[in-house]
Amino acid sequence: MRHVISILIENEAGALSRVVGLFSQRGYNIESLTVAPTEDRTLSRCTILTLGDKEEAEQITKQLHKLVDVLRVSDLYGEGGGFERELVLMKMPTPNRNIRDEIRSICEIFHARIIDVTQDTYTIEYAGSSDEVDNFIKTLNEVTDILETVRSGVLGILKGTHYMKK
Image 1 (cartoon, rainbow, N blue to C red):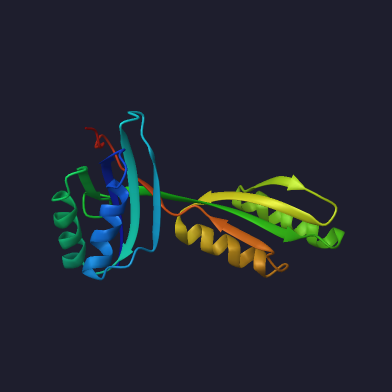
Image 2 (cartoon, rainbow, N blue to C red):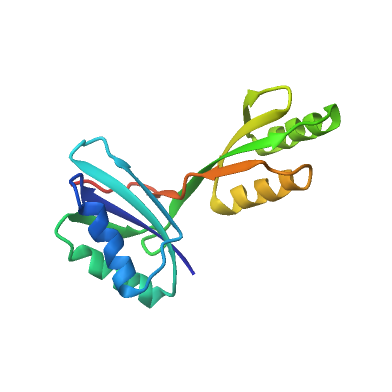
């Protein structure tokens, strides 16, 4: 089972290292990790995607709460749900007009953007849930080979009026 764990941590040297160390010490794998400062520059928001059962997710969140630099921890699917998004950038060859037209058509259907065009390649930007990104990549891969793919990792936020503050 997927767990998107959102952590509000102090924006200090070593804070992220302690969070990641907790995962490795306990034998939990991190599928994706995204970290950036929040609106309060003294805090960072860390979003971790991990796989495991409900008990493992509860154990992870309990252990994270014990870390000195951690202010808040939230499992987006354990607390009423949340929104999840991931960004992907892809570079694809465009050897002929048919492939270019087909790529443009797929981008239109998925609401993706072509952000760079050269004579031989398109660079594409798409944001969606992890499943939507996987489906987008699979669909484009049926048209032509993908030269390069860069994924941001999962970002998540709680639904409704719930939010994470200091």
